[in-house]
Image (cartoon, rainbow, N blue to C red):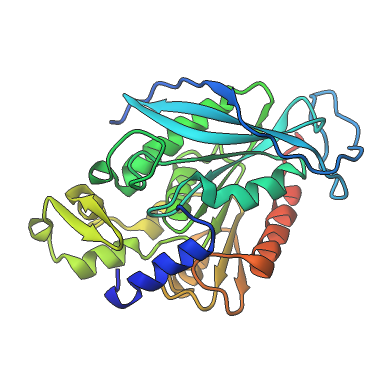
Length: 313
């Protein structure tokens, strides 16, 4: 990615609070970790299916637990946020972090959505960063290995008895947004919607700027602030990410800052043309990562989108 902005990206992620193979068998283990409570209020009555219509005024308490999935021999670590008293089966959001990030990037969003009755799972990609709690090496990571991680997580979440499998949404930031987009396209019947925060559709252009052909890619190289393997760029050179995401026909929400120098706004504007149905919300002055009022505005848009797209059929 453009050399002049590497330091800016690292600073942005730090300020945002970031510490930021193919057939899959799924296993999970839940262990208590400190729970966070929101003020609890009455919810709307449950339907016969056990679902509860989201009450925008409600504030649910929720519990957090460690939860693991497995992709081949790799264990995937994550934390699940489970609302209390929000129904027997609840809509779920799977959060995917960006390049070099971890599950903590999604904490501010998970806390806000769980307080409104949504199960949220934030996890570490295998090899997603040197500090990842999941197995795997950064030298073995690519957009497609991360897709297989997300697919393993999806299957694990579908096995949870408190999750409404008709209402599973994907959400991701930066590279995690791009991974969420291509995964949603490959699993449209299972994914009710997608929320993409400054999705890194720039990845393919960046790889082509760095390397003219696969022969030019070294076995390992330093990308931004961590060492990656040949597979990271090789998988992108001949990949049309916009064509891949265009097969997803359900509604998509994109949120992007117009001062993002890591993934320019134009990449989300182009995605609007690729999707059949998509909405782009722009945060004036926001860069690559949201905090403060920008994060609160983004959360408002997320909740509006999610509440409008729950399937009660």
